[in-house]
Length: 154
Image (cartoon, rainbow, N blue to C red; front, side, top):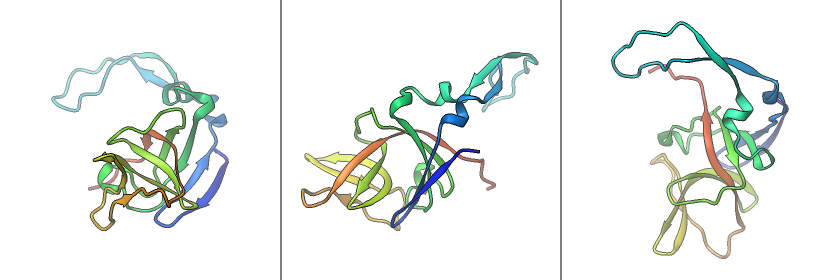
């Protein structure tokens, strides 16, 4: 089990998780792909094992995980309970989900740049975009590079 530190915020609680456990976990990786369109014949052989840390993490010294609590990003497929893999070495770019420290609280939103102004956009119509102003204490902690969640029943 990963160790965790809970960080409370207004619309989310992001729980920072530790990668040390992932480094020792390898899972079987099949040599064939699963079809998401028309079914294809399965290849019943194992190609290799995959180390989850190597697969999920490009920059180990600047990557961390946090658990999401809240629904402000549900339409971006980021749900309550998901685990985000966040890379602090990447620069925020328009349209990417980012984790920010905003006025003393953590939040995950989509970064947008419009007419030389920066915004944090939720992905839920119940929430309003946040225009970043000079009066705010806002730091981008990193760019979300993976979203880990269980499949949902529809």
